[in-house]
Length: 87
Image (cartoon, rainbow, N blue to C red; front, top):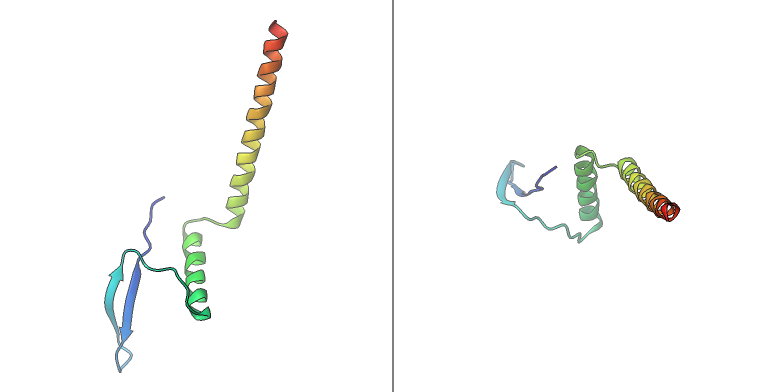
């Protein structure tokens, strides 16, 4: 997967008409206030959700990696045991 998260700076005029000021290709993720934190936290939750990256998938991946390591470790032991039997 490949994606880019852009930042849009918008200002509202006296009639609440939005006007685009600039588009940032590397927006800041610093949070200066509780409201700023909540907005950016929600942004990341939504972004990861659209990418299909959930805690459940992360747990499944970690379990799979652990099981793969255990299987490889078991295979190495088995290979060592087999080499000992050949001697």
